[in-house]
Length: 371
Image 1: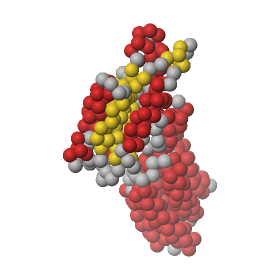
Image 2: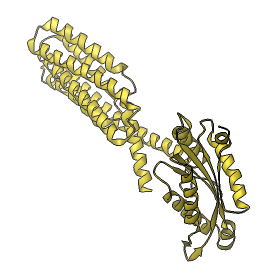
Image 3: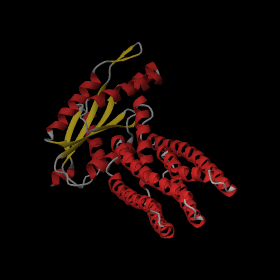
Image 4: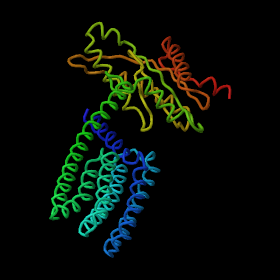
């Protein structure tokens, strides 16, 4: 359970980070708005420091756009926490760099005597904060500092202006910042919970609740993703497993013991697999295993015997020593036209033969034979 919780947290984190790059339009709009505003204000005030801060802001804005474009391009390839954290750091650094330039620019404008420039700048600052809350709001550690760094310098300078209207402006902007920050935190918590529920429900729909193995739906999705697409240069094997002697266990010891036995069987089957293969519970006492990238089809038969041997060893369930066995039908394929349902059907036919004697039957798929 702790591992599943960690996986859920990682998935939520990665999705939240990827939300940072969902759209680039607000970033482009802000870049254009800042460039035009900085140019107009410089023309009006002719202040060298203001010009330097404006140029720095334009460079930071271009960098921010470049980082967003790169992260958008790479986001689909990087689904692990380490890469997501790296992208978030690059994004956060570029965002805060622009916020610093914007904050310094706004403070300098409010130090100079131009009501028109003040009006344009406060519109720019409030618009920026609104954009940050909307676009970056799911990552409060970036959004709240960026908003604060951008708007606090200007409203601090405004607070020292002797005109009472500037005091009201400063207080109003500070209130908007506080309210916006609170809204960001609330939205983050709500979205985090929503994503967690969605992922959990999706996971439940694809896992067997008793054994925690993938179910048939998850097995089909895994097959399509890892085996079904692209050239099949190496063989794939599908093993269909049915437990012998399981029903008497349920009848003699009760369903709780039977359930514990199924969980123990699932653990042994999984332990027999290589990294990159998959085991699933199809229902009842039936399991399926997919082996991919076989160097030789004999590897499938070796795994079948290993699986049968693992199940045949005694199980200690509570106070009971329980012995069961397994019948296994295996089909191997090198044909690209074989899908999972066809292979499962052929493996089930091989299993039927195995139940009549031999316990293990391995065949090549009909498509492979025809080829």
